[in-house]
Length: 472
Image 1 (cartoon, helix red, strand yellow):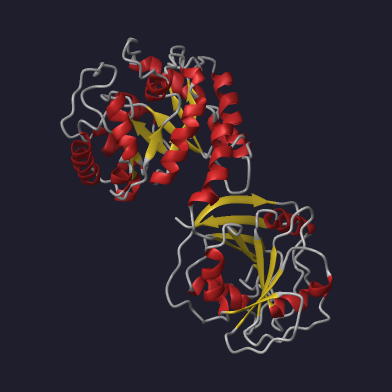
Image 2 (tube, rainbow, N blue to C red):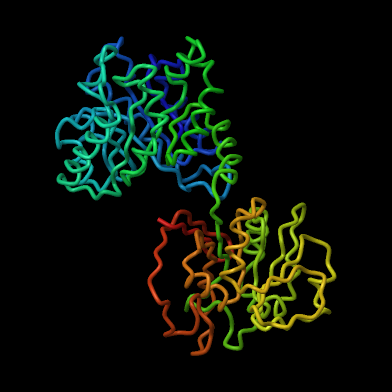
């Protein structure tokens, strides 16, 4: 979450009253890795007078007027980023909230500690998630003398009460984000305690936002009175927050934080990110009736595939797809594992895969399959066993599956697909009752439904649509 302060008294001196400068900063944040832009028009500093409701609305709308165009035109730092970016509005007075919420706002970042139902009701009315921050008393009033006998116990009870109130106002639990409120009614040791025991807040089951950027607690620990000197400390808290399970990080220096997240994620997670890439026709087919390679998409789709392959540590295909398309699974400047699955293990030794330079070859077969001697590592484990094996391999964090249909179906049956890259080619209809679909033949349903959310959609010049789906 990249911070954009539309004011002239931000505590770190990064605010601006120029809406064009604010928009330019938001654009820079998205390009450097921000999934969410958080705009605020009034400083949270308690040594500054509150601005009027009309002035706060005017400042926020000066940004909102430009936001849809910026959001739709700006591309992020990589393909794993939310696109288009989301917009969070940092405000708390119901009179402002009522005039600001609308279709272009994706989150209300409310620092009021939810003293009543008004903001929750407004969010429910607009179908917008609500952030609830832990604090005491009214915002813009200093609480530096607040003392806690049992801070974490009080915080957990506070969140349970406020979650119940928000749900009673019409919000679902998954529309509620929690913020432990670092530096708000908390002193140095309080903040450090919250950070040490952050997993207790995460355990409440709502997304947790950690506002770590240039916080006073960093200055207290490092004796740094200037907030702009606290970016290294911000990265330390970011890493700690990741380990503790926080979900969103509100920051000023997006690029450094994005790079830190990219490096730390594969080191602290033992999960495997599985991507499925395929193309479908207007009638939902992924191949011809004869299950032969269709080649019904454009060069743009091939270029997209090459970009997706660069994200992968391993590429997986079925033996039938490998032979039908004469694939070598190579990537320029990148050597992912080249993995092929076949229950029988009946591989053709003359296939180009075995005679082309590239990443290491891995063949996955059933436990009792007989396999010829080939220049490859043989895994007598089947698909589920192979996934368990590489899930513990620190060098394999992203697995890309390129088909065929039976392999893709098995991945969905195992419920391990995290991301779907789908090229929809509505210029073609194959027809035929036996033509394969994404989950098998027509009428052949999965044992249980799987749900994904559309996170990106692009149209190219060849009458195709590129779609990206993620797990909710």
